[in-house]
Length: 556
Image (cartoon, rainbow, N blue to C red; front, side, top):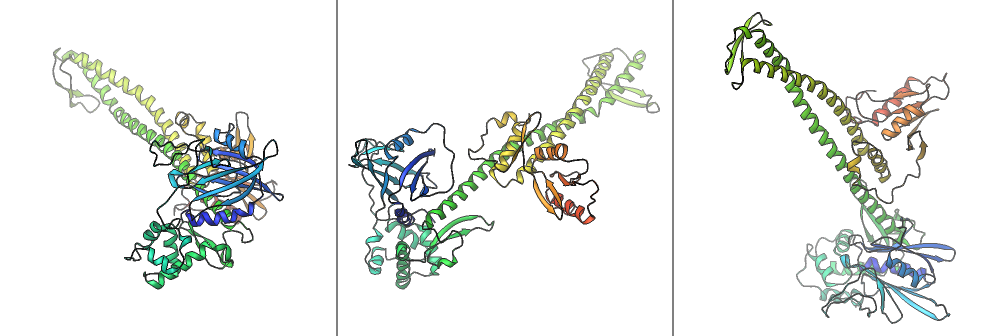
């Protein structure tokens, strides 16, 4: 469901419970977000105002966001004018996506002052403005300067002009007949949401579509329009009703995709705590937090994955070139044979330039062999050229063989990184993979162009200091009766778990010739002998944490 005028009105109605709250904190985590901190009756609240064109919204939040060390200019203006003031009222008009928060307080000489914070939630035209007592703009998040007098400008020191619309105000519709009369006459189920959305202000198409599904309306008639009108009125006037709930829409991957409002009984609502008086505020807080976290995870995953795959393709291409060179080296013994045969038979070869020469091959029972020559040179010079080519290919074979071995090792390492990345479930997991590859010379140059998200954390990880570096150590733990199995989550943890943490009495598990995690069965007592059942369980867990966990070739 879109953050339309209906959602805006419900959010605003809930925020009226904060009347009298004192504002004691203002922060701006990013260019599109302002967070206001309030104190009321011994409790602290945080109001998140987001003006992102895709996810614009206003709601209370419990999720902290990192702040820049140097506050932006608009944040400093808000601190100057709002800190210490109290909320007088929170209003919205005519289902507009515009919320006005009125503040009241005292200045330095104890005179009463009033300020207004206007939040305009209008897609790419979203804005936040602070006004004085005369509705003069003190400042705004985005300045808009239109030379045409017919268009609204948003600049400091000019009068604030409320946005206008040509749509009808649904709140002023007196009856269902009035509602139907304002709609066009040619209505069907395919265009009803578009027509209602374009006729009445603040009602989104997604809300109408979900309402039609909820009411099981399959055909547009006078009676179904009356049913729809009554339902919309119930949703808008939810403050007089106790049965409004917010229902999550979950996709096939069990991920929260969207939400919609309905009038089911509250016993059926399971997504949020029914006892809170800020139902929709905290519902949207969780919804958008999960949505943004998922989008950030996907973007971060995509960027790191692209970087790793680019390097992987580069080394694959290098391996192909190495194999081509090795293929050329297969002929080096032939060039040595040609040189030896020509040198051994120089006494009977005419010293003239020819294209081919036929000689007896004493390595092959003196069978005749025809050798192609470069007719620009004499047979002796051709023999020297064959020896030179043989020596060159001989040296190449040694160098390229070493290069192939190194390249295969590097490809195996990159494949292990790809396996780690595929098993990442959070931004912090990707961040640890990124930290690992940033320290590796294979990725070091490319990794400079990528930045981690600002809100990456590793709170649960233990920081283990080694001689050369500090690593995060937070292996996966499995309790198997009285035993503990530790499973590494990445290469760093695998190395530390196997080479540093594990004792001689512990048992190490790993899938044979398959990329996967290292697992260690902790045996505190050297005399403690695990049963075959425990060992088999450990093997199954190790196989599950490998690249071939779904393969039929894995046997435990």
